Each structure stands twice: as C-alpha cells, then as structure tokens.
Length: 169
Image (cartoon, rainbow, N blue to C red; front, top):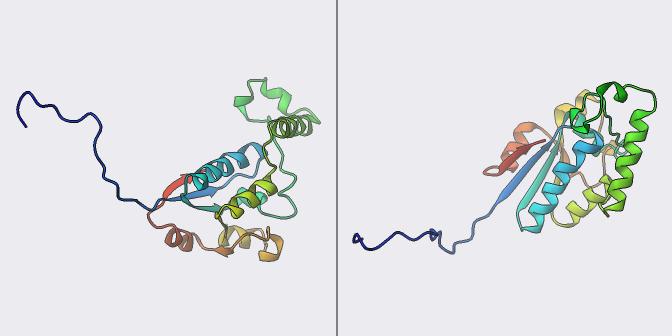
C-alpha cells in the first residue's frame, strides 16, 4: 500500500455463512424476569440463529404447568420500579403490580408466557429443563410444559450448545 492509498473503512469479512447458536439460561421465575429470555430467544430465531433455553432454579416456574400461567411481579426489593420500597411490602401490592404488568403486556400485544414459549418452539427453538433443579423441586417431565425436550444436566446443555453465545438471565 502506498502512502496515498488508505485502508478500507469497512472490513471485508467475506461471504461465508456461519452457523450461530444462542444459549439462554433462564434462572428467574418472576413475571418481569421471564420476558427478557423469551424476547431474546424470539429475536434470535427471527434472525435464523439456533436457539436453546435452559430453565434452572426459579426459572423452572416458567415451564412448570402449575405455575407458568400465573407468574407474579413484586415491587419488593425491586428498585427499578422507582417507588418507595416500603410500598412493595404492603398487603395486595404484588397482586396489584402483577395485574398492572399483565394489563400492559396485553395492551402491547405481547404473548403471555405459555403462548410465547409455544411461539419459540414453533419457530424452531429448543427448551431444556435442568436436572438438578428438577430433582431439588421433585419434578418430572410430566410436571413440565409439553414442549420441553427433556430434563438434562448442565453438562449436557453445555455439550448441546457448544460454541454458542451464552446469556444468563
């Protein structure tokens, strides 16, 4: 390159396609913490990225048939609500906050958690349950959302998602 030539501003990465994978670990079962993983999984699938969700600890509430349709939102300890923390401990506040969040979600046309999970599966996403969490909660595949592909160990999940970008929520 001569001194009058300049390097290109935009690098050429070539046209070779790469296979991308995304692994999302869903560890929270609150209504407000269920959506980040679901939204990101949906977005990744829309981009053609192989997507796997691993539900562990309290994230199991998202795939437990007894709890998945009734996740709660609590203001208690959640400084992001920008309200006085004492309000969150008042009787009825969790029910009110959950109702308001569900109302806003519905108004925006965002699917509820079971519907969102189905949308992800229908788009080619994979749902996995954590073996240790299942054992700790004494749950079996019969207790889980039908589209969960299996209860697997953390090691198995790591194997299935080798080379994936990993998000922990």
